Image 1 (cartoon, rainbow, N blue to C red):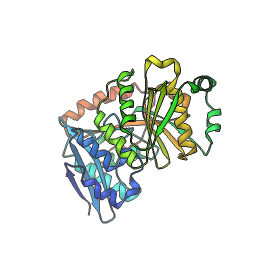
Image 2: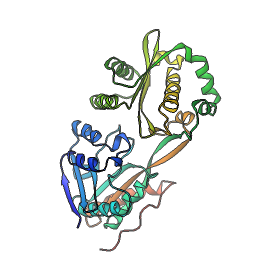
Image 3: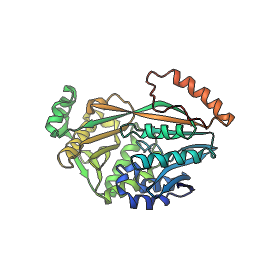
Image 4: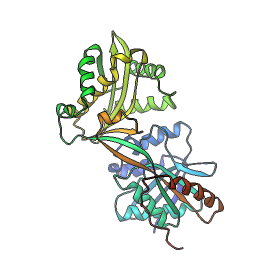
Length: 340
């Protein structure tokens, strides 16, 4: 028998991860990440399901009657916390059925598909009687290292990029921090605040995250200096064979030095040669410059689940259908809801 429950704190996830630590394979899967989100003021709506074979959870939040993932702009993606296979799928379907009494619509985004998360979620909710609409909402740029050395990787970069590094690299000094350094982090914040980037949304959360990653040895914070002045910074982390590129910024006043290019190259060399990563993840966003460094893209999906027994769902369905009709890439991830 499956038991499903709601919780208003992320603490419930601690026991789940303690019993199955392998389920957390990225910064965005860990209970510590959800605890940081909770500290920013996001109110958790955690639904869990368990039986004698395992447990699963959907970390959500509910605002003005709308249920969405518990995440913010720092999250590269959001996905279910559930074991692979039949047990996990059965628990997901049980939570989906339980949620029908909670809202007329649930929207999951951005959901990955390389691990079948989008398929599993959409099929579970369709099986539970929801009308499921899946659309592509973002792009994730990645590099699969494939056991190449940095020199081999670099030889495949565009000629203009390689020429820029050759001409400009000696004009800046690069320091890479693996543990949290308050002065280095302050330099990053100063550079970010003075850069072209939008105002940082939750700087205290990011700082706390950097401290946690530094304590665990996963932090890679790089600062570029010109004549002892910090002019560019990048914030990466390394975990489970993947390097995650979280933040990068430079001072426009020193743009001609191409310090960002020098920093990125230095970090790629570090994570390939010393950390031995097999994947570099550049997060979401389809900015053209990412293709100079990365070689592949992966889709990120939005999954809208509509409870058609409620009138508000029909209005939302009409809006979704209009948006869906304008998309070229429309995946078929979910079957139609089962009767009953």
